[in-house]
Image (cartoon, rainbow, N blue to C red; front, side):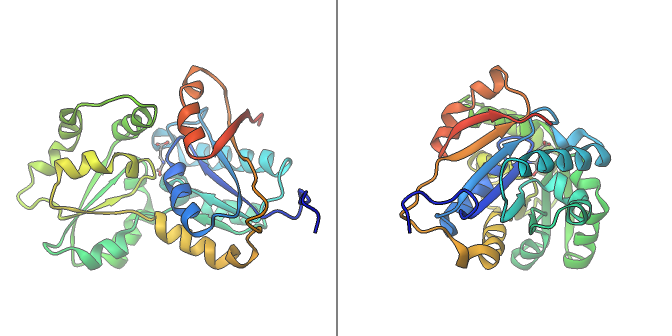
Length: 271
Ligand code: DGL
């Protein structure tokens, strides 16, 4: 085998989100699948997806995947966004032939571990309204009281935190106040947005007794079952690549974080 691996031989995975949220899924993927060529794409033009229509989000992701597939041969795609996954997965699977894994709220595991029977689903305003989400609750948490909190404010705060901006804990408390006022406060909180693992410490400070559940590990396990055996050999180290849809000062402020997660190249993707 030559030391230069053929472009088409390397196993490549695309992780896609509107912003930095998908990096929380990437962290989990890295643990199980370290020898993969990762392509990270954040749709900063469409951000925040949690305030966009279902049609907009689906069409935007079809455009992005089409543009990326012109540049890369993909072995697997992770839609690392609950807002997109709860609406677009059937459309994407009909359009593209490579395996597509989605991120959906981890209601089922949360319902198994709650002690007081109160679950909190923290997600974007769109995710909490989706029939897919409501169906998950009906199927897996019918014996629980499920409190829904849809907020884009926390999404923006996670974006800020990853850019190194400090946020006072009171800002989080204000947003989460509706749950603090409840007679029975959720003891299990589903992080139904991939941005939220980045603010888990702050959430834990507000709900110090609550268990936080997200779908990152489950997504990585699913990906491992699909492509684990095809991993590139450790001898080949690739420089992971990131794409955004529009380069601007906001994307520049993300360089240190992207670098930290192993994405040292950031390119603009024209759709
Ligand atoms: N990270 C996305 C999710 O999991 C949402 C962020 C947004 O609103 O764009 O839902």
